[in-house]
Length: 390
Ligand code: RFL
Ligand code: PHB
Image (tube, rainbow, N blue to C red; front, side):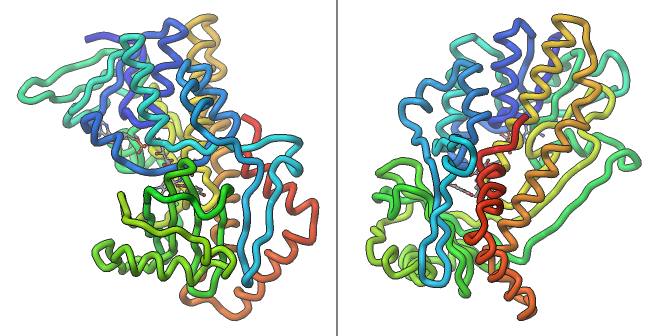
């Protein structure tokens, strides 16, 4: 087979790029290891920045998001038994975020691909990029007993943190930066009315908690747990009891509990791989960088990679201008590192660290009290949370 751009990974990054390129007449094929149902059962992100939402609209996949998603102008930080609100709208010059689940937007992107008759190949096994440094790279994969080869101009590695793309860059070229946190998030999805119309990030001596939502009838809650915990150890009842303990009384008293419809633990990790281009392979999204979910940056940073890559490829194919592709790694990394900094800062301020010095705890207290005493600090938080410009 032959195409212009071969995209490895049919998660949100790969699908969004595929859809955008297709709309500009650039041929592409997406190779996804899993089947569609599997991809659509992963419950992940919930908060989209405006730039991401605009990109979805440009991809002609934003209609349901605009109908069913919720615009949020602020969120709360709970600490010391009280609730303080961050007014995103006020502190970011009128911007806001969209609460719309990653599962839903991935479904919308698949429907977009179907509508345009885009090529998404599921159950592609042993996907392998080849000849990355040549002008004629290619990708091989296996479907059952058949090995297929796709010749292309460019390969995009949008295959997430555990994908094959990053691993095909020689170790002598790739530099990896990593920070592993000594805890994870236990997440529960439940068909209950959310405890608050806006998100609540809670700092508590027993550990961090987050009250989020997917809609006014679907709640998403998280609590910080030790890395040694397993999901099986946590009954629904145990989860609700622990969550309530970490919330101010006024919130826990109105918390509606119910059966979990999904429960999972995600370890918290920061990771960046540099460079994001090797020859004619371009990494995008979680394949190149991941953040702890505290700042809601992961999917949004994947979105900014796609924005840069999409515009760079259009410039290359439509005008023969390769400057965007040449600058891709530099531009995408500059923004990704800012997301790293923000996620690290928010994670550090709001979580309980097992071996923390009393000194560190005092600094956390001071960080919070400074935040709520300073317009400038709140502006900085809001600016990062709604998304830095592309
Ligand atoms: P994905 O979603 O991991 O998709 C990669 C796809 O590639 C496929 N794949 C392969 N295909 C072919 N061959 C191979 N060898 C392959 N290896 C892998 C996989 O099957 C998969 O379908 O990466 P992508 O597209 O870059 O998207 C990134 C986002 O998924 C991620 O950044 C976010 O979910 C992070 N995140 C959040 N981000 C936000 O912006 N806002 C949030 O509120 C937010 N909350 C979260 C989150 C992530 C979480 N977890 C579980 C890590 C909350 C949580 C709990
Ligand atoms: C979520 O709803 O899953 C969510 C929201 C905000 C975050 C992380 C996760 O910071």
